[in-house]
Length: 341
Image 1: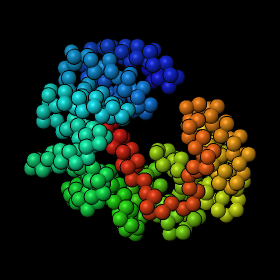
Image 2 (image 1 turned 120 degrees about the horizontal axis):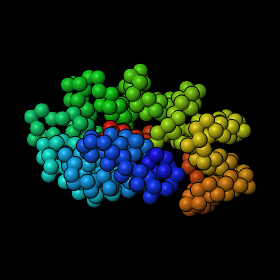
Image 3 (image 1 turned 60 degrees about the vertical axis):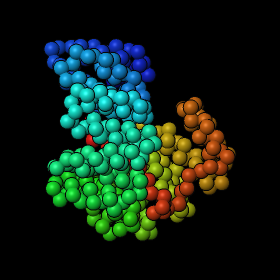
Image 4 (image 1 turned 180 degrees about the vertical axis):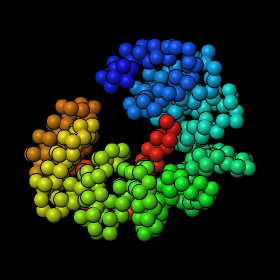
């Protein structure tokens, strides 16, 4: 019920329902709170963070580090790096040896813009431990990537895979590093292995599509892009799939592709409508594009600024993405969010 209220925008009722859930039965509050995190992580980060605040104030929890860590994760997802850092410190006060809040604190430093300090902190977590937690290595590798220190990141990932060859999160990161370094044959093999594992499927499909696109294999790229139906790359993938059709001179099929995807995946419906407008504008069909932009504004009044930018001609590129247009931070961040659950 709390999740339903949250999705309908009634945060007050959602908080009341959430508080009732936390107070039920004799199970410790910290366990009930942690059990709810995966569900809250599916919602709008700011709303979920607001909803979870009452749980963190329950000081009678048997293990107080867990509620603080949980709220810290949601604060980080909502972009509140100061609160995330504060919660991480409180969790560490209760359980100094716990690695998880240390990683949360490191990521809060990174989100706060102190990249050097974040990397130094994460490096000390790894360096000071005679048997480093693979999670810490993975976090450090992601931070190295954010600083364009790909070789250092690869060193950490290789060590993880040496100790735990079956870890698909490390394989995913290695594949992304190979892609960044334009080692496309190695990246292709890594992403194929990832796809076969059944884990991180959307990332694997997206990058395989990017590689195919870069190689000029448009049919294969279109087929792969079309399968990216969820995650942070779904919109970009469907726009590019539509762009491939448009490049072949078939604008109507390109528009139909976007329309069909929006109908099959309602969560992306408005984004697909906006993509149709952008495609029409790129084809010089400005009157039709303006009609669609007006529809987008009616669905999302807060997106009027973005639409106005599109009307002025600040349109996303519909051509094949280059290796320099790589989107690394998004997929990495998405992967880490999933791993926090």
